[in-house]
Length: 113
Length: 113
Image (cartoon, rainbow over all chains, first blue to last red; front, side, top):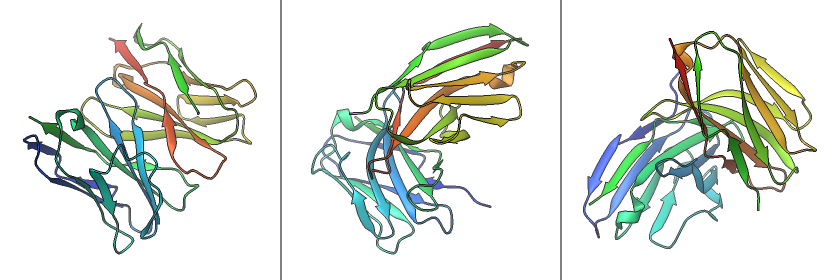
């Protein structure tokens, strides 16, 4: 079956612009996660959804970052007033329930010029 | 705060050699541990998941062990092949209600033909 998909695969934007990154989880997975990976580092947790609600958003770095999952399936990570330090690969994962094995998408590489 | 360390940061071996990658974590109260593989510019592929009650898991040429009390896991790769070249990441999920994974920085493995 289809895995986790993310669009776009690459996004180049200018400092100060707004961006949206999309994640389509594995069908039937109720839990969805966003992580951010900088060069040479492991992924760092941003936010976790169980169904439509954000169960844990403790990893969001500041209020410029926001994520939604309105129908409990597709999620969008939104970044306002982008900064050069936001440049990273944004990874999405999903699992069957919060305790299940997490399966990752290919990521979106965000570059802020 | 959980911290995950992977040693070595990079490893280069000749084809056919057996090898061990190490992962340590500071808080032994984990729910499970996952090993992932990441190819350059790609997302994460789950290799093995070990529940906290388990001691090891095997898949093909891969064997992962877990010693929760000492905060250690190892990934053993038998008869390495050039196609095994990738970065290997270890991640733990805590018991305390947060479903996030905490990752190490990874070990970059190169298997030379």
